[in-house]
Length: 427
Ligand SMILES: [Fe+2]
Image 1 (cartoon, protein in one colour):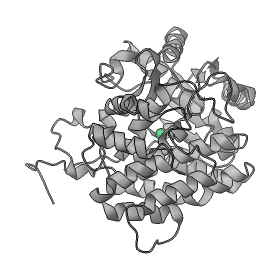
Image 2 (image 1 turned 90 degrees about the vertical axis):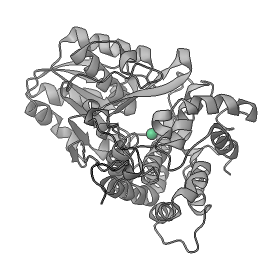
Image 3 (image 1 turned 120 degrees about the vertical axis):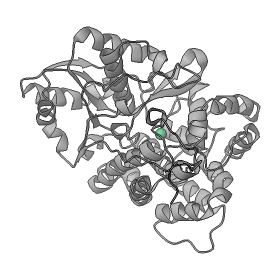
Image 4 (image 1 turned 60 degrees about the vertical axis):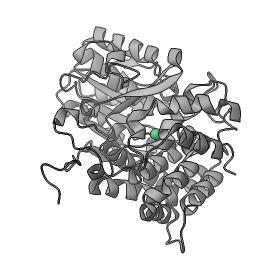
């Protein structure tokens, strides 16, 4: 075992958001909020979730405990720096002592940032990951945040990151710090029952990618040693604890995503996908994601022309999970030689069987079959890009160095260009 004096990291941290899981668990939200001693909370949501009746019900349950609730329902499907700022202004003026988010990753991320700015002040861009933002660290913990996800996807209830789109710079990036970790997740699969099959497909493929990428990230003990604990990033690399969470999420994704997409009323499949999303959130929140997520940000951020089927038609965009999954087969073919065994393990977990004579195409083939079965777009071309735009996509992906350092091998601009070229049409 390596100890002090090693050039490589010898330490990893095990952290997980406390979670309450199960059908009906959201009915206990009032009791949970009260337990934190909160008197006045900002309830962050979006118009779709409000219209579904979920947000009013959550509000009622919290108010029943004698807690004041103000609803902010302006979260955008893909949050921007402006939509985060509007929520942060509302939070600052509202004098809240805690936050509750009900919705998808967008609402949870909006709540994280509103909480951060209301607690510590400063500008959003100060805290955004460098080189895009200032990379400032929150000076201390934020106020309590309780997350109630309504999609089985981002796992944001379990992570330390908030992702935003910066339209002026045509880039998606994030704020990432352990103080952004929600204090509690209430994960109730009954809240996902009305999600259309396309939303279930995209969100579920995001889960699969979180788990696969984190399982295939560069191990923590092959990274440079960090002497100042304050400098140790939340994404610390593959480690035995993250592996357990990611492996279980892969198993669930392979076994239940097809069923959840085919029949939205399949409570068992919905339940395992919801649990899988949270498990993957803990896994990637610890180990990190890399090439597919780095490529996904420019794919989603550069053009806003594609109107995804099944989503609200108020603005065109590429749903996150689909923007991630399209480059994953080529990315995993590229990373294969860095850790062949672990690629085989991911393929086995996802397919639910031990694949004989595996090679570099085994995992990509398993992923492509799953994409086909759940109606994912075939590749980068379907999302509106041509070969001429590859350099632009590469440039955007290269800005995600925070993620690319997690790839199990060095990634050059040429490597990314060939990954994206190979991802134009997966099938
Ligand atoms: Fe993701």
